[in-house]
Amino acid sequence: MHHLAADHNQPTRTTDITTDTQTAPGSLIRSLSAGTMEGPYSARFPSSSIGEKSRRATAGREAADERSTRCHGPHRRERGARHPRRASGHHDFEGPQMAGDAEFKHLPVMVGEITRLFEPVPAGVVIDATLGGGGHARALLAAHPHVRVLGIDQDDAALAAASSLIDDFPGRVTLVRSRFDRLDEVADEYVGEHAADAPISGVLFDLGVSSPQLDQPDRGFSYRHDAPLDMRMDRSASLTAAEVVNTYDVADLAVVLRDFGDERFATRIARAIVAARPVTTTGELAELVRDAIPAPARRRGGHPAKRTFQAVRIEVNRELAILPATLDRAIDLLVPGGRIAVLSYHSGEDRIVKGRLRQAETGGCVCPPGLPCVCGAEPTVRLLKRGGWTPSPAELMDNPRSESARLRAAERLSVPGSVVS
Ligand SMILES: C[S@@+](CC[C@H](N)C(=O)[O-])C[C@H]1O[C@@H](n2cnc3c(N)ncnc32)[C@H](O)[C@@H]1O
Image 1: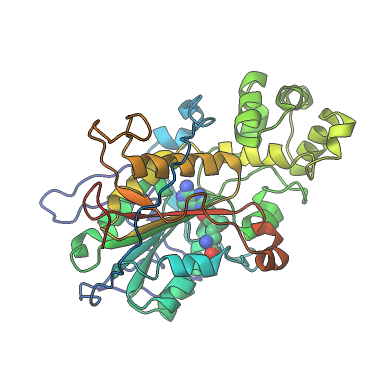
Image 2: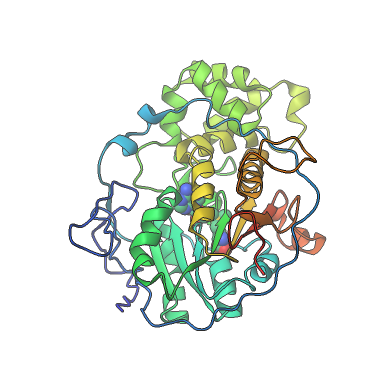
């Protein structure tokens, strides 16, 4: 095993795992030639066995049916051409950028519920696909000696903040910089070789932005600070909020605001933005959104620019576009009894999560409700709680940012259509 200590003063030149992959000829391990991050956070899991499988008997399938949902928004229009990163080869990763970053403080949401959800999973690797400051990962590692964590984040500041996990839980943590739609390649590269000893027994998604991303003015995410419009979680990516705001036409901007922000006044705001160009700072954008909204509506639903900022951020980071396929893939990766848990923070995210878990739960069954399934659909998970969980009143008091959170979770079945016992 190679366990590389984090050294924030030692910039490393590595390549970004968000780029193309290739299979190394003759190699048993599929290699990400452009992507393995051999930088300060990376350590493959040791090949030693990690102990007996602990699998608990699980409760029976929940009875009630759940209305299937339509996932809308991100699929309406693919804007690939506006994302040069998808077309353009590699992005060099210049190493951690903690210098000048404020301290990374993020309170993990529903951490008790998440820790309990992963208790019964088989011994193996839990992929934390949205590592952030590592709050959830730390809790899982501390509570469950039978799991290791493969932590993924596309934000170098998050990886730097979470890198203490490597020393705090020796041999049990691997951190990789990647966007989570590369889940497959990351899992292959860092777990594949040891999959027999370390199966993937959990995947966690805590979607959206972290508090430090919102709170650090220079990241350009927030209407509360005046800063250059940026909003990139991955600071090596090309598309910025400034580009979205200054180059999309009125129709495209209105679609973004409506689909990703549920903004009633999308077209008015889009027209105001186009008329005011160039718009270069978060302060300018917040002000012109406020002025574009009718006065009575400004007083409802929080800051008038909240929905616009959310929508532009989602567009910049392609947050919803990549989510459905990533969730499907995460479910596929799980061993029987393994669990997926997803925390979402707005209706667009939750619709997708609910829809993909529902799809896995029914196997896409198209038979009339109440009649036996004859269409050959094969369910692959059981939902752990229909409707999911929301934060407790106590958590809402401690962490108001958890307010919109909804946690949904499911367990992988042993054979499609059966229940793990
Ligand atoms: C809400 S925070 C996670 C906080 C974390 N659970 C903790 O306890 O500290 C979300 C994190 O996911 C990362 N993220 C969001 N979308 C991502 C994606 N598509 N790929 C990789 N990382 C992503 C963000 O950069 C951010 O650090």
